[in-house]
Length: 322
Image 1 (spheres, helix red, strand yellow):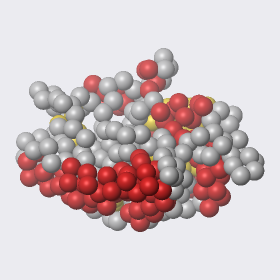
Image 2 (spheres, helix red, strand yellow):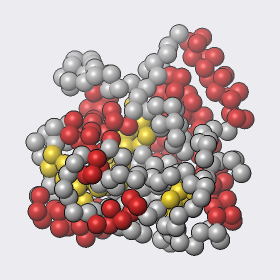
Image 3 (cartoon, one colour):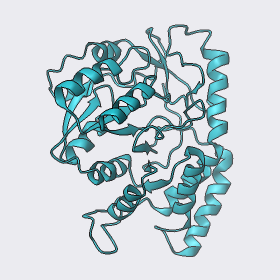
Image 4 (cartoon, one colour):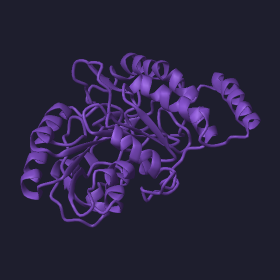
């Protein structure tokens, strides 16, 4: 199936007007549209937000700020390789946790087992497919009671909520991606969300070479003004995008695919993916068909992850792509 970016072409004039303003301002980075994008995201997410040129830059800011070098971080194997690779790049050790069949997200039972074995300093929980991990409450409570840092990979979770609570609000930090396939996209980009003011200050410096005093050993993870303007325009339309996909899924897809991911009461998915557990002819493939532990040549015994990799498919669901 041909991929369709979910950008509403009615917004082209708005984007072009923003870009004209950027051209006229002669400020192509660190300008008002970066701030507008961050403020717009914070207004939706309910947490202070800091834009980056990529998910990886935002993730590294959190991993390095919390001093995880040389420590163990638990991570689901059913995720994109960016999650363990960023953790390894920050100098931490990664151990993998199994997932659940019903939501494809981290298994709380296996997390407890792995925490007892590995004594982790931190845990990555990954919200797969646009919905929030079904066991996020149990995972966050467990981490809080044991003094384990909880980080949320929210790369898929634009527009999601659970009884009004947004991704990133359970952990010390959440990290979103705005890669080209995402519900909201800037082509490349990411945002860090957190209530920790010390992390925000560290992240501001890390993304800008550690300036002004280079007390933080940062590099360039800045987003440019053109990408930030594109993001700001789309965030304003996010409720419409998610609402359209939800209505289409419930009206057209749910009756056809009873063997699908089914959300708990009060949960709203952003519908980055529509996941079913039966083979379908016109599929956009799988969320992940190769678990991270297998890609890395690790011998981990993760039976549910292995099952999920071979037994789910994604039904095409693109904004106004009917």
